[in-house]
Image (tube, rainbow, N blue to C red; front, side, top):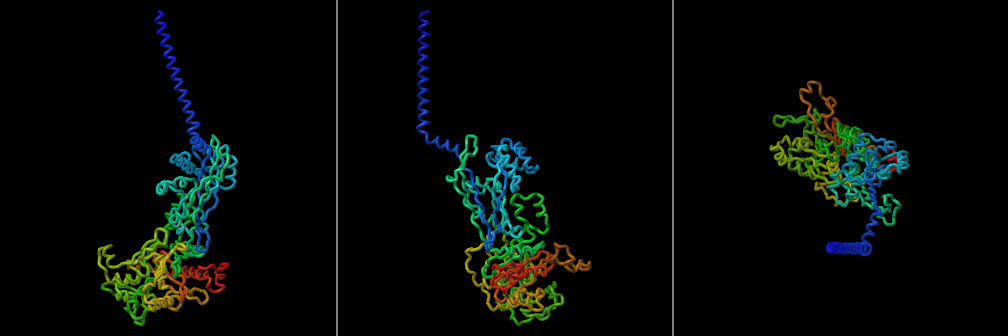
Amino acid sequence: MRADRQEQDLKFTRRALLMAGAGGLAFLGLGARLYSLQVLETERYRLMSEDNQFNFNLLPPSRGRILDRFGVAVADNRDSYRVLLVPEQSGDVASALDRLQPFLPLGNYERERILRTARSQRSFHAITVADDLDWNTFASINLSAPDLAGVTPDVGEVRSYPYGPAFAHVLGYVQPPNDEDIANNPRDAERLLRHPGFRIGKTGVEIARESDLRGESGALKTEVNARGRVIRELPEQSTEPVAGRDVVLTLDADIQRYAHERLGQDSGSAVVMDVNTGELIALVSSPSFDPNLFVGGISSADYAALRENDRNPLFQKSIQGTYPPGSTFKAVVAAAALEHGVVPPSETVRCTGSVRLGDREFHCWRRRGHGLVNLREAVKTSCDIYFYEIAERLGIDRLHEMATRFGIGEQFDIGIAGVRRGNMPNPAWKRSRYDQGWSTGDTYNTGIGQGFVTASPLQLAVMTARVASGRAVSPTLYRNAMMPPAQHIGVNDDALAQVRDGLRAVVEEAGGTSFSLGGLGIDDIEMAGKTGTAQVYSITAAEREAGVREQEDLPWRLRDHGLFMCYAPADNPKYACVVVIEHGGGSSAATRPARDILRRVVARDPSSRAGVFADLGNDRPGGA
């Protein structure tokens, strides 16, 4: 019995010693850990504590402005009152929206958008509930903000296009970035792109110069309490955002707006160009759309209306539309004929109204004919029979070579996407496209700007500028662009002078196809030009028998396109203008708008006659 008790006491003593040893070791470990935390790692945890104490809120940069050639803002920024919601702070998003409903009624579509966004992104990213709020709504939400957990009234910037539709196709528009946009940007830009209200360029200059316009974000340091509430801001320890750089265009806002208004709702385009520098003064497509609608997110109904409009308001016709140049192309054919000496200027060709080639009849636009015409008279009266003849003498290869000198079929990079090449055909092109040989009939059609030859209004403006200046100018959209000096086009100056004389006669002499315009209408400043009609549909014999004889008898989409190219002053060219009216029924639809636009351009030039600008309803000239 005594031995058992001693054994038990011994076991207890051993256990007590083990427990005491374990306790001692634990105490030593705890002490070591406390020493490590409080002494060895004190700096690390001090920094971590400061991280919990301070927040850095991203400050988005102001987007750079887009200015016209005189510094007028055509794309700017304005303040926008908005409401943001942070799901992490609001709890249930649907309930948060219910609490907000008395102050800001939201439709089902908007609620679903917000809920969908909350599900697809991280909970600490803010969501824009609404923007562009009126002051009363914004103020009432501010007053009730303490009771609206996770809801933050905010003042941000939104893109503004003061000229609306006039610049829409050139400037493009901005929209919030989507997942694809974010994936295509550098990783360090993700936080900025996800910032509520931040927008990036989607089309036009806005996307082409995105890197210049975007700027660099900053950060505002704030001190917060344990619940995350901001106690104070620390601007001295913050980084200011860097605003995007302004982009200056060659366009003149006054001319751009006027040209847009002058075209009205016609489906067409207008291009105005400095013939010596290649600077674009106007680049208009009509009808257009309001880019401000896209900034905040265009409604499905508005977008559907734009897409379903048969006059294609979303299509940038000035650079993307391609048309047979019609008789405007005769200036190039005339230059080629004189350059290669295939026809002396005094030689005449008899126009009877038609000419037979094989079993096919080729007609002149004037069915009763022009009689005997030389090159000058042929340009002046736009005689098709004359140009069939000299096109055949030249041959397609020489026609092709001369047309490319004047920019037909050339790809121009003006700094925005969508510029189309058009087409200047030759036998190799036709063989590769249709697996057919070239025919004399193809040459006839090319000689009057029909058949396979096509050009955009921009290319026609380049062609006009090169005819007027004799130099291979290229178009540019950005001011101060480093453009090399334009070289001589390589056509005999005397030949170009004779072509220009014919083009002046078109407008300024009786019998010219545009003499009825009455000229430019500015003192003694003359203009030169050339009409053109691009055939869309050939009226059949059966339709003529049924009474379809004029363009007005056809449905709108089957009517011919009307074109007019012109420049002024005729004796010292400075500005070229091209207008194309789709399905206008002929060249007359384009002549007066082009004349009016060119007249305004010339009037804005400081060297124009005194008093002219006032007559046009403006205060003073600005120069173009």
